[in-house]
Length: 128
Image 1 (cartoon, rainbow, N blue to C red):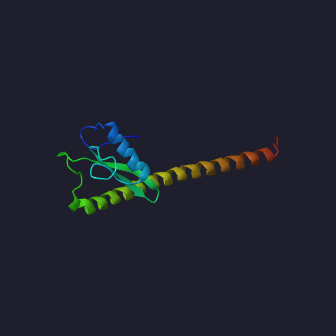
Image 2 (cartoon, rainbow, N blue to C red):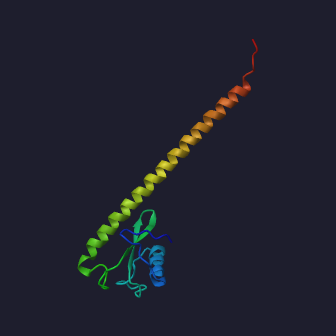
Image 3 (cartoon, rainbow, N blue to C red):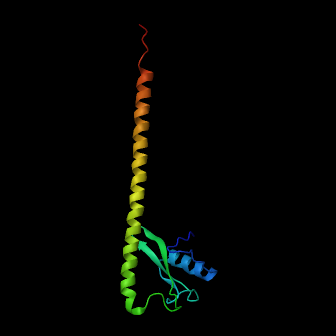
């Protein structure tokens, strides 16, 4: 699993934290502190789910050691996480589309080259 962090320092995750992150990714459900799964983790991991499946996991940690997302703000947090997932999906789809365009152009050039070579091989050489 690749860890990408936003902030001044990259967080160090314990083996329990990593297990919670991996579980959240594999099962598409929240894990860690404040959930019913792997509650010993200091972090709460929430999957970024889209129509493509789980694209990533967002890790949240409260500096005070309490739940990362208070109950009264859970709906707002879910909405923000859903928006992040959609943005992530859009970036992935745009990247895939660019890659497909490169492949299409390469195939088009290959076809043009083969057509040109085929024509040259079928055309007899004439010497003046």
